Length: 230
Image (cartoon, rainbow, N blue to C red):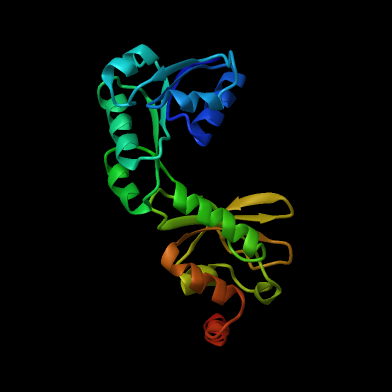
């Protein structure tokens, strides 16, 4: 069932988001300061376009904030996005709100205010790294600050026959899921690595390099074998 969604910002992200929402059967109102920005939308695109600031209550009222189920603030300004998101959440009690943030250092602050954020720089960096080094750590999810990642990693041959709990103790990472033969299991349990295993781990950004070193058998692995033997 479709709901009413407000998109603030008719740039490349906002215009595409608005069109996809309409395509999925939602009613959409999009707000932008510049009337020229609406040229990104096709004629008779199916939604309502409003010229003005996304944090202007009159414009929000015109956009249907009183009955909206969701709002996405995706302008090019962090301050505008977060102000708009806070008004949507606190004044109009819109249940689902998200703000696009360019500065990932601010994301933690906004998270404490209860505003979900999408850190553009962090997300883009992850995507570039996936293309540059596909054989290395792949980030599947990141918290808004970029400090904690959920990553996917295939178990290398050097870890076949070794207890996967050692991977946790040596890196500080936490194994969330082990996928073996297409079947997932929560946590490592008593499993030892087998060829074809894929693990999903929660790891801090600071510890990610250590995780790669341990998996690749760089200095420190002899100590790992000694501790396992004991």
